[in-house]
Image (cartoon, rainbow, N blue to C red; front, side, top):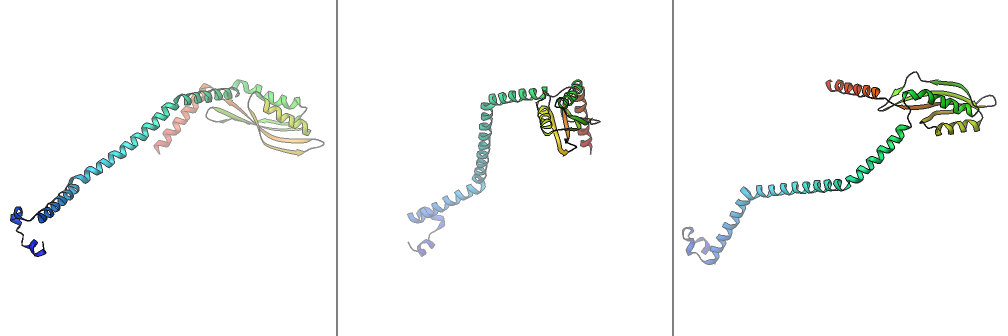
Amino acid sequence: MTFDDIRRLDPKKIGSWPLLPKVGVLLLVLVLIIFLSYWFDWQDQLDQISREQQKEEKLRTTFLDKKKQAIDLPAYRKQLEDIEKQFGALLKQLPGKAEMDALLTDINQAGLGRGLQFELFRPAASESMRDFYAELPIAIRVTGNYHDIGAFASDIGKLSRIVTLNNVSLGSGKDTLVMDATAMTYRYLDENELANQRKAAAAAARKGGKK
């Protein structure tokens, strides 16, 4: 069939057309229907399907994460119990307010027991408050020989209560060594002090929120 034969076809009498032009028109109509269907309907549906697939993937990931957490929950609980036990053991090493005087005496006796001479033993005028404990620095200066000063530092580390030596410096005196240091002591806060800490934190939070 030539191009002229196609031009002579009557659009009003498609039924009488030869087979090849009929098939061509049907294919063209089919392509047009598919295109219009995609443009006006299928495109939105495909986009929605894609969004739903993404949601499904996120839900699957969330489910797997929750499932893993549920499987690991006993291990997490055991780990938390161990941490609480360790924390409790450490907390027991902090003296209460009533025990601080005894701790200061222990530090002093540790030095005297090693034959050291205290030239300075001055607790700070006030404590530094932390979340659940307070710090009290003590400025100390002791004189003695190298061996006794080293043994004193070791004894401080072996006290039943937590004491650390900070800002340590050694100098020479007359036939002796001089050690200047800050002995940092710690104690836990009692219930009233903890309550005051929480009130102060809440008041600071409210004040900050009003700005």
